[in-house]
Length: 220
Image (cartoon, rainbow, N blue to C red):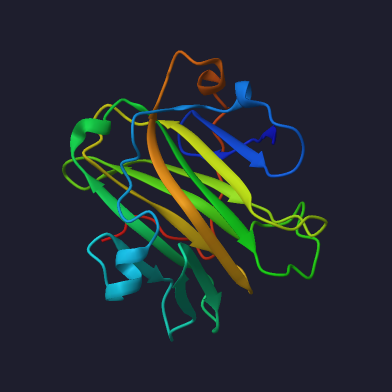
């Protein structure tokens, strides 16, 4: 597994890594987790059984239904079927235990049969994390873009490492689908990481980038 450092799109200093599924392993470059993942229903099984779990939610931009979802064998599939520009599929984690902590949000993504070269253009999907204060004010917003490589096939792991604001009271984290086509997602996780690890220390210069039509902001 080759680890490639990216310039992430963040609202504050953050670390983002894209773990390419091709090449030799370089474990020393991977920000290792501490303990178990805080994410609930990470295999989407409760969502598959209920169709409306207590953990996962989804919201599209506006207008007519433009996305449909399907879950099979731990894989979430989001398919665009209409005109609206984006859908976010997310989970809310409550409690101030994450305040000021360095955390890693990870998932594997795959774009179903990309037909065009998307390198250098707007992303087709993103990891998305929003930190809120107790009064519901957005403290910071973090995004990591996923650009599927048409020259490669298979799953592409992504990892976004962020230091959450000290006044964080709850967070929303999920996946944004913002292009035509089909996005597949599996193995999401959200871990506390070792801040002393070299792979978890690299800080990137804050940047700004908007999703299509402003994209999802505070979710309710």
